Amino acid sequence: MKRPFDTVKRVLDVVLAATGLLLATPVLAAVALAVLVTMGRPVLFWQARPGRHGRLFHLVKFRSMTVGGEAGAPANDGARLTPFGRWLRTTSLDELPQLWNVLRGEMSLVGPRPLLPSYLARYTREQFRRHDVRPGITGLQQAYGRNALSWEERFALDVHYVRHRSIALDLRIVLRTVRIVLRRDGITAPGVATAREYLGPPALATAVGGRGSAEGGR
Image (cartoon, rainbow, N blue to C red; front, side, top):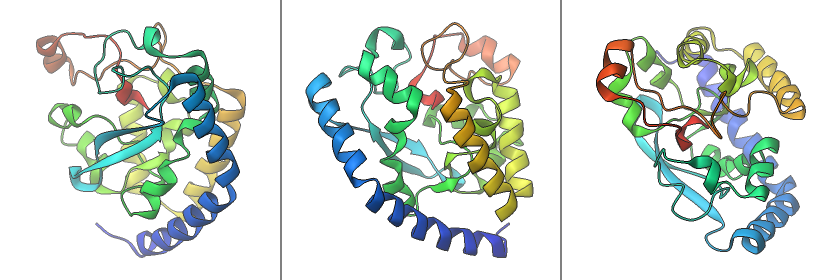
């Protein structure tokens, strides 16, 4: 259900994303050049992700893996991450181009992170509520543990956000995210280079079977 807050939030998203892109232009240019020098083309990584109501859009970020490792394939992310790419991910600078997604209305500054399209069929009805709002560059789960949390904990935080979203909650999430990024906490899931694939509720997960980690964790 749409709230008055959602309209105010969209206005803030546009103003802050446009301002952020303008102020971050030197950083964006420097990172783009560094990606080009260390990994070559393409500099940007585009991938289909489900947004509000599950509608697909193309998320953009700086490339952090060698070509062929960022098409959603879950195998051996660690081998595909370059040293510079790993640094990009630890600083979250790879996420800066998503300000463009925010400006286009596909994302918000704050909201549940957009994951892989293959996860849509694996959500419970309650978990799917995370798609009642625009996905965000950061969200409640990023502010309280990121990939160190279990999928169940992460989705519970997403649904909590959808139910209780407000300006005050968004501000608290942003402030906590800054602290988490500076401390570089929860960047990866235990035992993998990025994040484990979400296989669904236990019964479904058993049927699907484990396939390692997935780029969709961020």
